[in-house]
Image 1 (cartoon, rainbow, N blue to C red):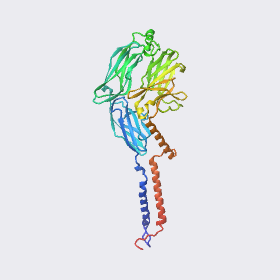
Image 2: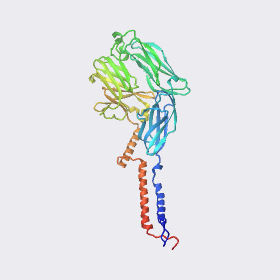
Image 3: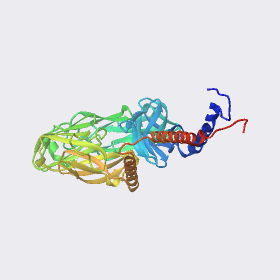
Image 4: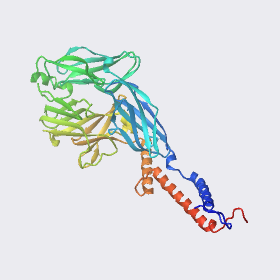
Length: 488
């Protein structure tokens, strides 16, 4: 390759020099026009978190709200990273995916072991990931709180009531949030007062939280002997208890004479309604409902989110079994309208649709789901599916800060959906996401390419154009012109 300059002709090195200079200059001018994938700009500018509580008992759910900030930015995944690991109960798969930045998402977490947990939220886009600031969440054992039930024992006959007071004392120097459940055995029901269950109530530092509940000996469910009422705190079963003594005897006359006390006239004598619970399921066995009477059953809403069911029959019905189940959508059934919180299936045995005069269902919806998904709580209703989805008459009953409670009137039982409509802000955000998705799909023929892949393609095109252009200039202008070094 080495050649001596003769007769005004440059060396090979000299022949290549002008072309190399031209190529470098062209690249320097073209570089600012494109984004090379390594230096891709992150569209997600910030991820922040806030919690419903900074300190809770083990077994109690804590809501962590994560807010993402960005301009025209799609968050591919949003997840929580914690040490030690927290249990994420909602969303079910542990993360959110495919939404526009600027949306707040709620995570419901629990822990089974007391201790200090450090967590942060991570938002991922096609340009990489952004983490929030690390935050500490502390879980303590329910045994660190003191629980007492007053009275420790009571005697009550059918149709009568008594007052139950439960004191939860927090001797700690910081506030603590805890869940609780009052377990009433068959024959006893809540008549008034505080809810039997709460997923989160805050007890201030060095103070006592008092729950007052009026409990009735159900007129249609006479019992003798003693029964035990237990109180669960967080994941601690029977943190407190009391005994209740019923009738000295249960005869048909004694039961029927006091049956008007509960608004139910089942006249079941000494045979009582039974309730059994399993995962996401409650099974109710009713011995008898007299014609024209209404049977009202209070339920523990933990498994199904259903807290009460009422059935009014036209004619006498015996040995009735009602199964309430929080279930997935049955195969072949179209998705429920609106934004679905849960699907509920209610089936029955020994009770025909024709014999049901009316039915009512009381259910609850987590406040964190409502706010996290920007749902208008006044639009939440129960939808029933037979051959199509039909909206049931639904009324809002109360709001305890953790749950919102509703009651729906039903013509019969089948598959139901608890659903609601977005707020104006939520609807606008949903429409924006759909529009952005359509634009992306139309621009890429239905296939969404990551931005760094598009940058790579543009970069390769620039390189090809620069090299091709430089080669053209060299062949047509530089190679044909002789150069001379040292001579003229």
